[in-house]
Length: 294
Image (cartoon, rainbow, N blue to C red):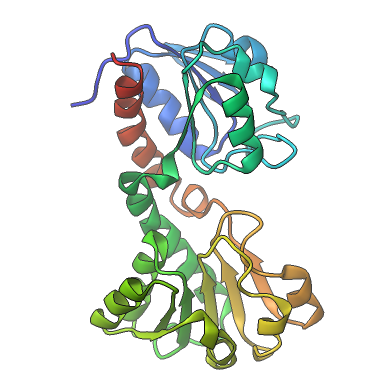
């Protein structure tokens, strides 16, 4: 049973199809939703052209799962004009108000700290991240299938990182018959991968791994596929980067080397928006109720 948010004003700025589903659920629970850059309507939902009037008087702010870039631009599939989040916008919220986002960049963390609001990264929560890893992994495999001249079954797939998304992805690839190898730093993660019947390697062995892989799936949000490593890849190797922007691949080096490398941001919202939206709609109302002590 989800909590009542009766009369609670919540600003929802930017986003994609996921946030549309979330807006409808919040309104259904009684919240007064103030939406910016989302084509939503209905009882309990009011749309605004700008951020400031939407945030003024709100008790919480929800930013897109993909958050904002380093210049403050808010990610939004439906925005006609780019919207920029400013420190002054956060100062319109009461001190200690929750600001929810999928992944926060350093600039957003700094703004939140200065404004005295409580920043909550949804993708750091196991409940959200584990559920979100399912459409992320399916979308990555779909992208691989669309780009490869071979089947996933029997292909050599390397998964870099064995966190929540990496583990789900490696399990799916293995189930499809791929010869799946996991690269991780944590010995416990490598032990778990071995227990699952997967091949394993450390990042020190990455050049050799890259040289053998048909597909490389990166989930590490740090530069792991630099030019020195990429030089070991075969010309037909496919690189799919699932890490948050800018990813963990030197895309310029990949281009110079003639490698096919793609950054795949926001996969859940693209390949399974309904499922991804329902994940948010399942978690966010309860989280707001707890944070606002309703």
